[in-house]
Length: 98
Image 1 (cartoon, rainbow, N blue to C red):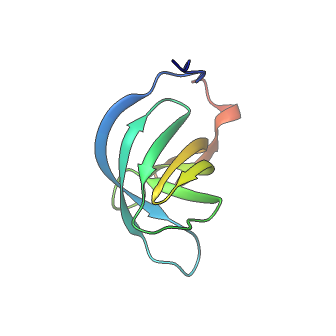
Image 2: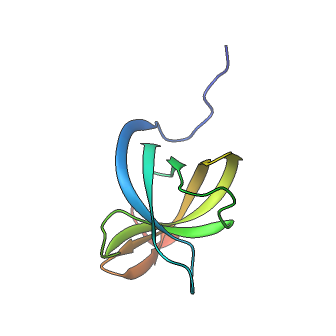
């Protein structure tokens, strides 16, 4: 039996969200399968997402997280959150009291 070595406990949520792969790309809908304070498991609409992107929890992009891909399995990816985005403004995790 494998031991879960995550620092934060993952919670299953199955929530719709959106991914922004950067300038020149369109926003894609995705699903957050489970999430913790430090990362998430996502199902993306495409294979081959970039190493870093923005995960948006609201369609207008006012609430989200900057993500770094940690693992890939087809259209499913595990990401680590590197910054919080609130009202379109980026806040580095290091500067937050989480």
